[in-house]
Image (tube, rainbow, N blue to C red; front, side, top):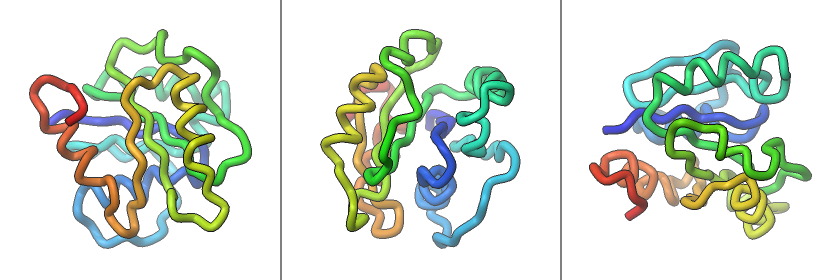
Length: 147
């Protein structure tokens, strides 16, 4: 199983997705520091939002096999700049979370991740489990290709 690091702004759904990927009960928990698990590295949103803390993401990404950029489907802007994946030394996937939120705009979130350079994008609802199995399949696939 490949290890993934989850990056995104606060409230993007990183911790909830970590819980879903690990098969844990979903409960709100604010991530205060980098949680390094067997399969998932969960990062605080402030690390992606703050330039001074961003270098920690780069350092921890070297401990992962895959980088996951998260955008929730009802965000009003995207944190990730165009072509940001070109700077990565690992495969980068896009993950749209909270796809069933009343204000969700999934196509907009997908287009933002495509603009950032993600060629493989998953749409998930961590609470219902929709799409979580697809990410697990991707992480367990030996070729690294989306199934």
